[in-house]
Length: 73
Image 1 (cartoon, helix red, strand yellow):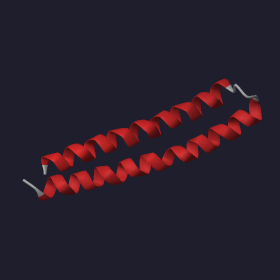
Image 2: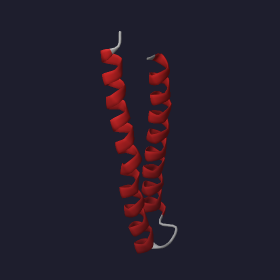
Image 3: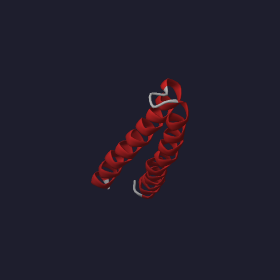
């Protein structure tokens, strides 16, 4: 069980880091607007929506980790 939780923990951390990094990039695009006003906002919205995919995977992995930890003693 310990190895399983370690693998799940690493996967969780990677997905969470990628999702939060994408959200940070989206917010920076909204604030700095390096491509101009409208293109930066459109790109920021797209990146923001894409960021939810790895965050959803991280949420599902966390839920499975909790179930594995509660089943095993």
